[in-house]
Image (cartoon, rainbow, N blue to C red):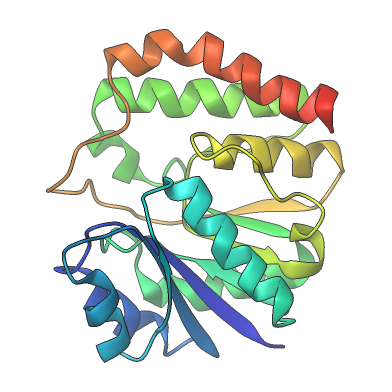
Length: 224
């Protein structure tokens, strides 16, 4: 089975090298989608042996991973391992995620199946729970961490659930997979809180959830 790691990256020159080094031990190819960085992220990724696809401007994580998915589909890989570029995801967990994918179409690394979620700010935990409960209720599934970006996909299933949203790609994609009755499972994965950078979760984004979720629901339940 051919496996490819897709790493979305935006201004991650300081962290992406070790992530690539750790990841490439477990997959056939590492693809970094440089989402409009200006800090040398692409050069560092190439130096560490990754295939680099560079966006001219920043599209957001959703746009970056979609580019990686299309690469995997076009090159006929069997499984995609999705890893963040900031070092939060431990590459040593990749074999366990791939093992779980033998009987699943989507494997999610969950922070809620261990104690690491307790280190996250309350607002962020509220956001994750909001999205997760939405997917569980509308999709008829029982998962714990729908926003996790540490995932494995069976490429043949992913072709049917490519997301359109760049902001809430994980919610849209997972809900679509649930609606199509693809097999979704989770693996307990410890993810430390990132020391640098700004979280996407805040009081402002929490207030905007109803509007944004209306958009996601329409995309999945109506327009598809």
